[in-house]
Amino acid sequence: MRLHSSDVVRFAWGALRGYPTRSVLMLIAMAIGVAAVVMLTALGEGARRYVSNEFASLGTHLLIVIPGRSETGGVSPGTFMGETPRDLTLDDARSLTRSPGVRRVAPMMVGSANVGWRGRERETVVLGGTHDMLAIRHWRMAQGRFLPRTDFDLATPVCVIGATIRREIFGASRALGSWLRIGDRRFRVIGVLASEGRSIGVDVQETVIIPVASAQQLFDRASLFRILVEARSRADMEPARRFIVATLRERHQGEEDVTVITQDAVLATFDRILGALTYAVGGIAAISLAVAGILIMNVMLVAVSQRTAEIGLLKALGATARQILSLILAEALLLSAVGALTGLLLGELGSLAVRHAFPTLPAWPPWWAVSASAGVALLTGLLFSLLPARRAARLDPVLALSRR
Amino acid sequence: MISLQHIHRDFRVGDQIVHALDDVDLDIAAGEYVSVMGPSGSGKSTLLNLIGLLDRASAGRYLLEGEDVTVLDDDRQAWIRNRRIGFVFQAFHLVPRLTAAENVELPLLLAGVPPAERGKRAAAALRAMGLSDRAGHRPDQLSGGQRQRVAIARATVTEPAVLLADEPTGNLDQHAGQGVIEVLEALNARGITLIVVTHDSAIGGRARRRVRMLDGRIVADEAEADRAPA
Image (cartoon, rainbow over all chains, first blue to last red; front, side):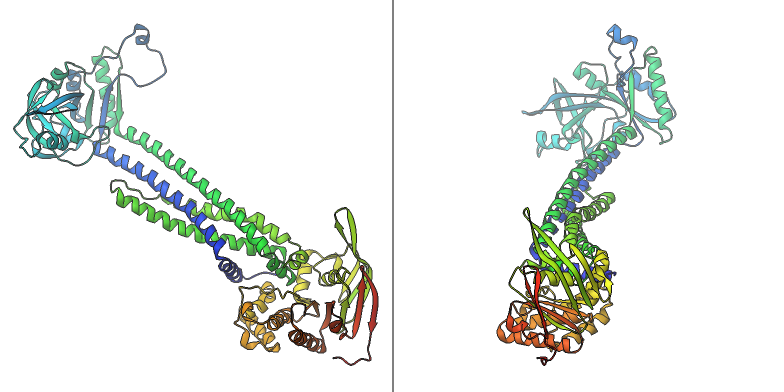
């Protein structure tokens, strides 16, 4: 004997509506589980995209030269000699401009100093840079202009300030043309950065940018923090990297003591880390689905004992064990499906709310999380109702019917 | 029609074995009207459950319509319950969330009968019980007598050969019980084999054949062929 599937669905639906409390309870459990997966993965995915976007804003075709080898393993003679990596110098930076694949080079220094103007003072990050830094980092000017195009060695007493610095130090006064005291020197403000966008690590709005040679004097240090190199195209990046490594090795007496990282590599690393994080968070949220499954099993067990007489009756009327099984499973599946749909809806609404509250965070749930959570919900619903359903199918009709 | 040969049914209660049925022989011909009476615990309900294939004998043979049903598997027994046997219970056992018509349709639904035909047959069964105007009502909107007649409609909608009634009037008042018994007897008059289990001698006494049980044995089996059917 075969039941019509439409009859199974209708009967199961009727049974669910017949016991609204337990049905709603299970629905909520399922919905919360699914919504948690959807929302948490949306957050993880949002973080991943956020970081990607931040890196993209760092500049395109960017290579970053850092002093010292970051590779572990392998023992170089320097290890025994107690040799520290050679510093990066302005001459190093200048030598890198000679490659056809390199469009721009920006030596960079970082330090912190007290800046002040007419009694107002604060400590802030001071960047030593050059004219090309503006283009490489994709910054925009609000007022004035950026550092002038001069030789790297020229220490002109000019500075460009971030929007926050301008507000805090100058307030309503005119900043352009004023003399800002940085450490024990004075610099003329020639430009204010537009207050948009953040850059990984440093909030440019809270920095003061001075020519790199001036920074060397200010911090009394010749070594560069790093050198930013912009390749002409994506295809030029690898030749440019090889050129940089070869040139600097030659300049450093054959010692390969710099690390060149490409923006792509950094991005890929972050991508991997945050991708893993999204999976992990999704996995944790999936635990709530399993918990929902256990709840479903409990409630279905109660449902079966609650409806013992009905199941006994169905058996008396000629239902086979398989029919009883399919009726109970259909009930659980139907409930899981409605719960999953509700959960998806809640999750999407939650993600929407997050995107609304934090417009910079692109918190879109990834498609795999949406489909996986719905699938897992149905599967747990099915799996955890197997036991109750089998118990129902094995019910002794005589005992079931004699209970009132 | 029904032939029970040396049927035993034992239950374990704790470490004791209770003989609910103890070597029962019973032959019932098609179209008979049999009442099974006896005190509670005498095994009459066990006998009815066994005849209705809700229970299996511990020993003995049971032939239903010439077929040895003791050896059949569960699914085949379920099929026979669905097609050949109708149950009427003391507690009605209607599904509370379903309407009268939907309750009557249940056995047909389990048999996989398409909805349109189900509706027609359920309506006919309800009409036969005089309940056409109650088809859309739920059990809690019906009186006790009406509920039992819905249950009878459900038991007969598959046109079974045997109708098994376990204390069919037990939950009804005198008047409603009378009505239900008359409906059952009318069905018997049209050819269905009717077996009624009751402890009410007024009800049991109406049957043409009266089986009396005590301690799992049949102690009396009297037929009054000469008595006019009530």
